[in-house]
Image (spheres, rainbow, N blue to C red):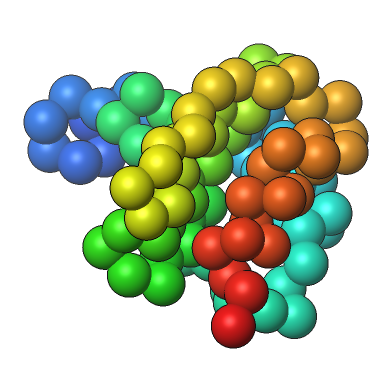
Length: 105
């Protein structure tokens, strides 16, 4: 609720939209929480973000803007992965695979 008004961060951030909340809720229902629960936060552009961190070089961030896409960025040791995938109610395989890579023990 605190991020639903413009300027919620004190620096002019966009309000988190109802569409972003709805897509984030569906995304959360579809991901596997049995490994590591992600940190969830709001971004200044109005999107919600899910982040998994095992170390400084093993991390994944998935941004849910509420526009039918997911943006992701990962550090996997020396490798990087990033991109945009359509989101129509199912977690794209590439993002699911990255979650498993970052959270594998």
